[in-house]
Image (tube, rainbow, N blue to C red):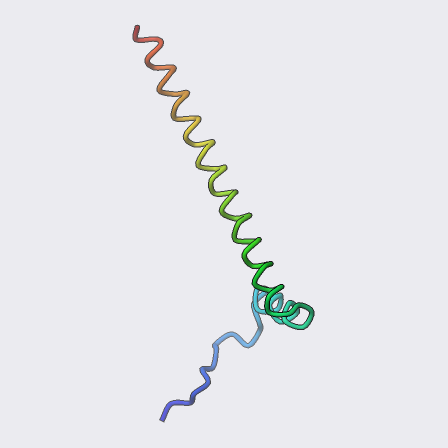
Length: 70
């Protein structure tokens, strides 16, 4: 019969696990959720910024090719 609790191969907690444990000590549930949502928004903003830079480079490369061709 399997134990209900899974045993992890790594005995040391990850940094994420440690931060979540500290977070749970100091913040209430709603605050934790708000903080995680804010961090998710930051990561999404960074991703969109990288996408904008990449799109700008593509547009500049295409504009450079078309201006030479005409």
